[in-house]
Image 1: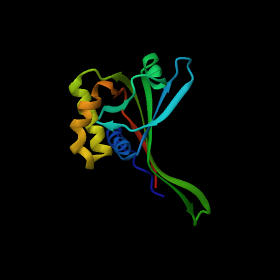
Image 2: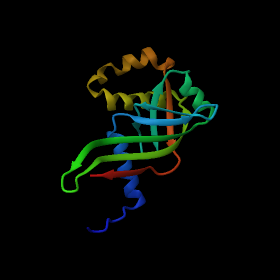
Image 3: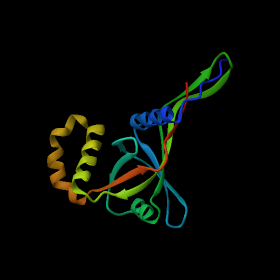
Image 4: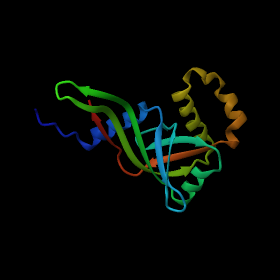
Amino acid sequence: MKPMRKASRRQNSDWALEVFDKAPFVTVSMCRPDGTPYGLPLSLVRKDNTTFYFHCAGDGEKIDCLINNPIVSLSAVSKCTPVFEEDKLNYTEHYRSAIAVGRCTQVEDRSEKIEALRLLCERFLPKHMEHFQEAIARSLDRTTVIKITLTEPPVGKCKQ
């Protein structure tokens, strides 16, 4: 077996960001005010190499956690397939995964909020963009948008 070539940190970061882009959801893990863990799958969109967004209600457990401690961990799997390797009589899993750490802030700027919601709609409902302006007019003021800024480069792994 040939030794694996170690990817540079930059290559790994770019590859990890692609995993986040392809994942149907990203698990965002945070801490409750009492210190216990709280993780949930969210529909995130990436703006650039360090910025992600999601939207939510303006109150609830997620917001309580982020007010108490804005540091979160992101985890995504974009491909996961159970495999039986006949030649080795081995059960395994082929996967692509990524993790990252970031800091959350609530988006207050109206234009950034609209941009984030547009990115979310373009990612998850691109065929319905003709209704975007109407939805913004109706619900922008009651929609909370959270920005996650990565505090370290993301890391990815795969087995195929």
